[in-house]
Picture 1 (cartoon, rainbow, N blue to C red):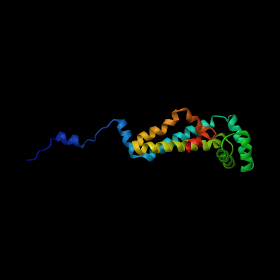
Picture 2 (cartoon, helix red, strand yellow):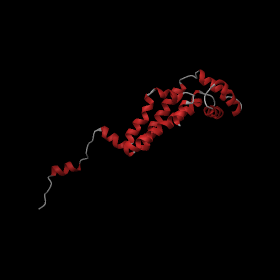
Picture 3 (cartoon, helix red, strand yellow):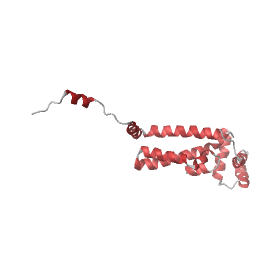
Picture 4 (spheres, rainbow, N blue to C red):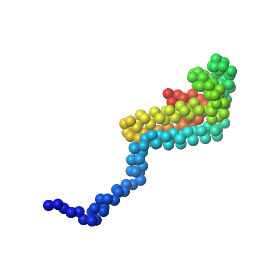
Length: 164
């Protein structure tokens, strides 16, 4: 003996299940991890470049810039050893940045911006592997809420160090 479904029950079965928007957002993020990371990266670069452009170079950055403007790499390292006690990796990067892109506030701060972004990607990947995309995205955003975010747009070695 078979049971026949009432017309009301079959109409209800055909209607899509309505979920609250947080649940829909969670499912969308879990299905599209690349878009989540790309969106967060675009927002990061937009804000970091705006912060770098709106902030003049300060004393330590000016000393680094003067060393990076030297005619060759050996002169840059020699000059910055006198002015700055930082390891030479940042000096080498800044020397080539000045050669390739100039000495503007944004270009001069690009290595730090990239280093902080790499750190954010690593934090995302580390958390997302065990807890999912949503928690990885939240973990990726966490460093932006701390005082370490100022290192993202300073032409010093701290942003690069965070990236490594």
